[in-house]
Length: 94
Image (cartoon, rainbow, N blue to C red; front, side):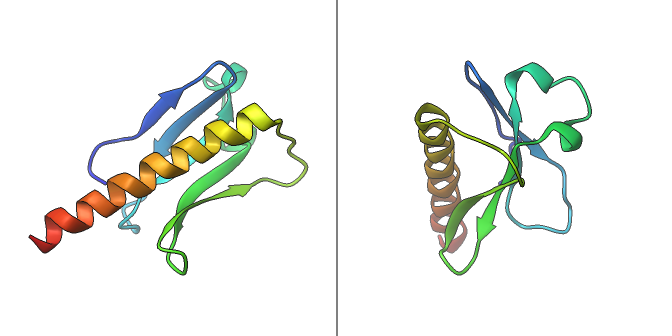
C-alpha cells in the first residue's frame, strides 16, 4: 500500500504507521480523544496483514473494550484495507 491510510470516526481514529520492513500496511487504532498524544501508548490495537488468512486482521491490546458500533467500524476498515490489498495484487500481476 503506497498511500498512507487515515480514517476518523466519531470515536475511533485509524492511522497508518511507517514500517519499511513490511510490504503491507500497519494501522494503529486509537480513541478519538488521544490522537495527538503518544499514539503507541494510547493505541487500542493494531490492524495488520495476516498472511494465513490473506486478509487484514485486528490485534486488540490487552484490557481493551469495544461495543458493537466500534467493532463494526473496525470491521469496515479491515474490509477496506483487504480490498485495497487485493486490488494491488491485480495491478502487480498485470
